[in-house]
Length: 429
Image (cartoon, rainbow, N blue to C red):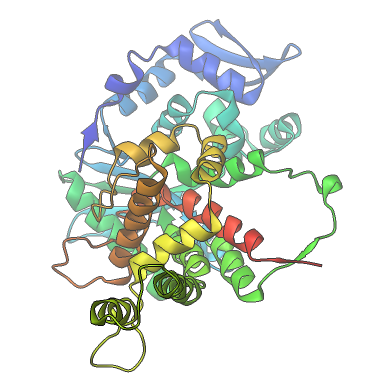
């Protein structure tokens, strides 16, 4: 596990800068008054935090390390962002108490983020465009007024931030020192226990893409309900069901496989079509003669090259069928690249310069069209195999959650390919 110290990413974190950042999120004015940061609106004080307390929170963040992009780990603490993937959100999630393991001297708490974790998220996503992914849309003035009525004490800006944040965290704390791997193991075991006993699917959020992917899709589509029109094509119902499963899934594994099933639907058809075309080309060639034994043998080779000797049916070479399907439905590869670029202008370069970490999936050749189909189909098929085949000892094996961040980067291109195929295979009404 790679660990990074916060100061290497954020540089020196100053109290004034943090106070200004909080004021931007809460849409309040802030001034330093008598060693207290006072947040107000139209001259009315809403909340405050002492310079010392803010410095303590900054110090807590600087004392830990960042793990897997969105986790924090120290010698005696571990905190990760969670997202609930249960079919129906359960209120049990809100009522789970602090759990203590006296033997290992470890405690587990599902709750709103700690102040240091909240600060980490604010620093990491300081761009105002990211705020809508992190915070619920609420009328802040009304919320703050209600919170002031509910407490006898001065309101901290962190109290307000924790009310409007979209997620909760798991905090694992200990009385003795543990390394990052041990804390991760404690966390995984606890989350399994919740799933087993309470039917709660609480999944660690390990990558920024997990937060913003759906919003990116809406950005490149016309998501205004007033602009909707009646459909003009009949779409294949099986493909629609796979597609709907993909876009409704909260797991990149299910997303990837669902979109793969859309592509796979046409494997038999395109593979047989390719064989028919090759046989037709052979027998209509001017050089072909039914009197020549060599020509007949070549023809037999074309027909039987994929026949499984031990079985009657023709064995489809799946990776080749995948390539042929891409060629058939995406005749101009630049069309797909343009869609990827519009979604995320750094994704094309990622595909071209990086193998898939968990399965050594090929880098994608963006220069030559023919090589593009070969390398993209190889990458997709390697991912598919690593998900489907999970025997211990397999070198190219996908591990759920551990490899989710890497797999999530492959999902957009699968979705776009599936959408192109569904549209191209539809019939006009």
